[in-house]
Length: 293
Image (cartoon, rainbow, N blue to C red; front, top):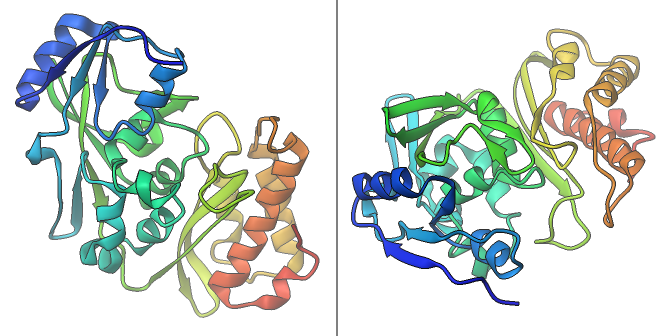
């Protein structure tokens, strides 16, 4: 199947993009890497009248570290994140996560902005944005505004973007040197969509969590920053405490059921990931006793 007929415009500037989006509204779609948009068009899931190609806007590409903030342009490709010394040094969780995104051919074309705007609940990067406390930078008719990642994702393929908005950058706080991270996902094959995944960031002091952020994906209609993580902060982690945290996590989950897994399987795997994450971050293999997948 091929896409239905559409008009094509190659944007010459951010202002040009905003003019086109203002004129066409919901009838237009932005093309960045195209790894999500084009398959959806070919399957006739969407049929825009106009495709606005922003691929030549160099000002939307690149990674910069200034003070305590990392700014990543929306057109920065997954492969660029994977190779970046700045990301490796200042946001290593993101580098680990990108290595799980699809396959090299897709990472060479797909962009961080496209991934976040698509808001697939099984994608790695939206969950990382929650865990890392990212800010999404958006340009629209009223000018530039910043949206906290926790407020950006609103449902399956839904975000705080309006049809007239363009996602232009992501801002991340530089990861403290005292922090550590964990990333893992269960998938049928490397590169497939995750069945369940977890992106975690922590500060460990004297064998206890001083801070812990758990970003789950593929467990609901959007990425989940688990509130149950608070049960593990500032206390001595015992099997009983961890079990209580797993029970609290289960109450937060609303996993889908599909061809890949049942809802019950996703709930089980999310708790397995939580257990493995805590064990890994604290270097306590004893906590993994009884956790299996």
